[in-house]
Image 1 (cartoon, rainbow, N blue to C red):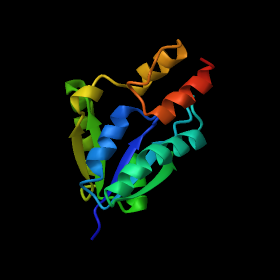
Image 2 (image 1 turned 180 degrees about the vertical axis):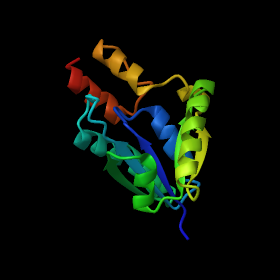
Image 3 (image 1 turned 120 degrees about the vertical axis):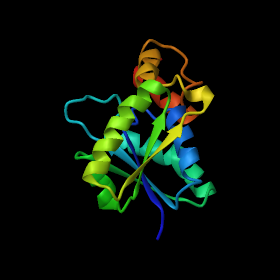
Image 4 (image 1 turned 60 degrees about the vertical axis):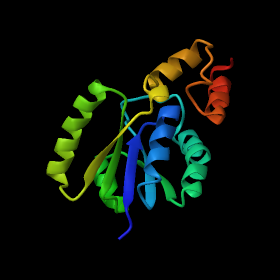
Length: 165
């Protein structure tokens, strides 16, 4: 039975923290499904199509190099429902610090109650990417700052184009 993991997030934009999680995940599973959560109450900087493109450009080569299949989907329902739809038995969650851990443990407990057959796996962020959040990246880029240390080069150029800096 193949090990299929779902890695869900908004990916607005893809950061080096997301990349760190994917690098760790592809060595653990046979297939990774990167799932962009669509929340109608939020207005993302990048369109869904732009985020799908960035995910393919950034993550697909890493998955291929590891011999791991990668797919990308969108979802607008529960993460656990999306996981079941794609046959995932593993939910991947990256952790930057203790605050993330507290919040993610609550979600993992709720998900386990709803779907005991789906296991949440926490991956600690590498030290260099711990402070990175997509929110901070958007703020820095929006004010003309250099985000090249926080996002892949492809994403940095898209942010520059988006903000006209």
